[in-house]
Length: 358
Image (tube, rainbow, N blue to C red; front, side, top):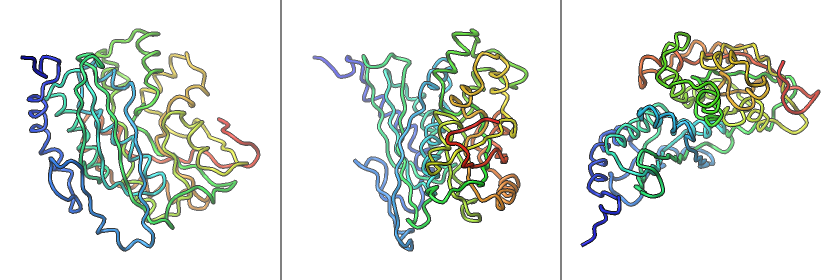
């Protein structure tokens, strides 16, 4: 008789994977999670938020993109889960939302429980770093759709904010200041271009140690995306923030302008912040136009706050003197890269639309 396993789907291995990740998932639970693992849906109580005047739920979904190809090449799967959470929750905080819970979807050609344990372990760490609960997920083994070593990730997060406190950018005006917060590296956007540069153009091996990076090329490219949730919520609690932009695909050129009213533009001082070593390395190739770099990558700034000019120094000082606990969840080699450093990187202007690099 034919069996499901003979078609390439091993239910027993799937069950073993669940056993390996149960503890990691439960480690993200807070007092609002209802029920236990194994329900057909995840349940989350809103009892802690009944005091809001008009609570609004905000949702975000994203993936890790072709950064996964680097992880698969290196057989290193413990950080991409952090990336997945970061790409979703960092979008939520741009409207001032507190992330509540997270769901993941893992699609793969062959289920290896030990790989799932590492991936979900990273997702669980990302949830802890952002203060949200991992309340559900799906692992789909699809032979014929993916190669045996291939997998893809998608995430979905839900947050909450009081409607009157949602950050909208509607009151941004000329003269307002851009406060940029450091990225940890490439984060999780632009990896098709990264692979074009490092693998196809310059033929770098991912296991090559580079002194200026302090690690191998592959390790540098897999540096986890920084999660800004706790930082952003702390800043919002103490300072008036007009707009927040998560610097993802489109870089500094495309993302900040989404936050400002029509008729306004941005002047960005491209030399006003310290770039991570991986971007200094890319600039050193002298192979990509300056504007193209800032349109493709975050170039060292992962989150931008727009504030009144008179408040800018206070916001920068608050961020630079704030303790950051995210490094506790990653390998020591990444600790310094996960530190938060804030810079005044530019201003809002009414002399032009779009972005000028100065």
